[in-house]
Image (tube, rainbow, N blue to C red; front, side):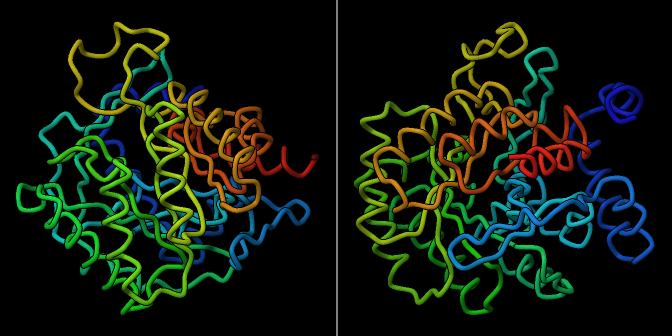
Length: 345
């Protein structure tokens, strides 16, 4: 019904307005048992046990909502009803962000991609902490929190950027909010760019992060456009500081990877989600697994649009899978299909 009826209608409207509508609907439906039951009746997975324990955390299913969709933490009550084992809220920042100028989201329909220029829009870590604390915990649902640098001119310098990350990390740990934390060093659409995806600056950031007590797993959200020799240098820094793993990876910044190049503007105006991320992220997962074996937890993200593309990432070495674009282009029923695919392995 989604692909044949609902999606053609939704795709006639502004994507950010549709996103906001779905978040509001999901938040409303998640407030009541009836709402959760009705959504679960259509979309929840009820097959055999496919749970997975990663870094001491049990996931009911190995599929999570990626950061970038529920950036203000409003959907934790409803997401278990579509078969997800967890979600990553955020990215959250030390100060509230209004985001970049519109359009912040552009559909590239033929290429099965979203051009994302959101600019880390969120209400700020303190407001989001309070919202997560009000959430009535579902023991079968994992909540991670992604942390980024505030998208304004106050955090452009290296010192200010580090202080910005550390503030959010410290506050989350002080309030013991979230089951794991991700340090997002690869958001391309903000003041100062991806400065902490430089190994030297990442080293400085992690030194300060590790000064704060944390009993929960810490992951790094990785860029996918770096050559392997540069990517592996980042992995070396992450390994040196004892972090538990990596998320591979973030948006694709190369418009030439689009199947239909004419769908995107000539000049860069945001990163690509969906299909253009598929091969790059899977190859980096495979190489990371080959180099580090079981040393890192690997969360695969990028271009998961089917049962087959999810399985490709698992076969390459991913422990868990994150999705967003697949839900937009295929629909919420995709999660149940992926769960059934894992069930048969």
